[in-house]
Length: 301
Image (tube, rainbow, N blue to C red; front, side, top):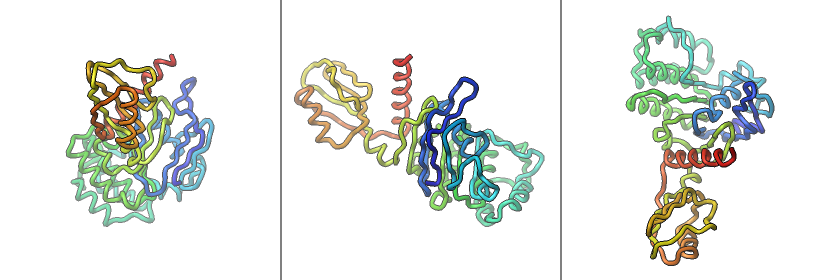
C-alpha cells in the first residue's frame, strides 16, 4: 500500500476531527475520499503530508512514517489544495522556472504540454489569476515532476464546468502512472476515472472499497405490490429508507447481489410483485450515505 493508516486520531481542543482512521490506498489507484464538510478529509490529507501530526495511531506514506518524511520523499509527492498559497509577484513562467530547479525528475516536456492544454499564459502574474487559473497552475506544478503519489484536496472547487473538464483531462494524462488520492464534492467529474473510494463522516471512516464493488451493491428499487401493504418490521438492514405508498414500495438496496435473490426477498414479504432495480451514480450513492449517517447521528443523540 502506498498509503496505510492505523487507528489515526486528530483532535483540536476537545473536538476529535479524525477518529480511529484505518485507510489503505493501493499503489496505482485513483482513490476518492468523499464525505460531508467537516468529515475530516482535509485533516487526513495534511497528516499524510506531515503538515500536521496525528495525536495517536500511525500513518505510512511511500513506506515511511508520515512524521519522518524526508526531502527525497516529497520529491515523489505532489500536493494540490484549493487553499494553496502562491508567490503572487511571480509570473507563471517565473514560477515554473523556480520549481524546475527543485525537482530532479521534472519533465519540461510534460510541463509544456500541460500548460498549453490548460491555456496558462506565461506572462500572467500569479496574483492576477482567477481561482480556476490558480488551480490549473498548481495542478501543473503537482504533475510536471511525475510524482509517484498525487494528493488533491478539493481541486475542482469553485470552477466553472469547462475549467473542471480541463483539469480532469490534465489529471487523466497522469492517471496511469501516478497514484491519486482526491477529495472532491464534484463527484460526477471524478466518478469515471476513480478506481477506489472511501466514505468519511464526522471523522470516522465508514467504508473503503473499489468503485466497481460500490456500484455493484447499490440499487434504487421500485416495487409494484399486488395489493396495498404495510411495511413489515423485519425489513433487511441493507434496505435504506423503505417507504410504502399505496401499491408502491421504494428503497435503496445497499447489498444487491442479483435480481433472483431480491425477488425471493420481496416475494416472501409481499407475495407476487414486479420491480425495477436501477444502478446509481456516485453522487446519488454519496447523498444516500450522507443522509443515512445523519439519521444515525440523530438517533444516538
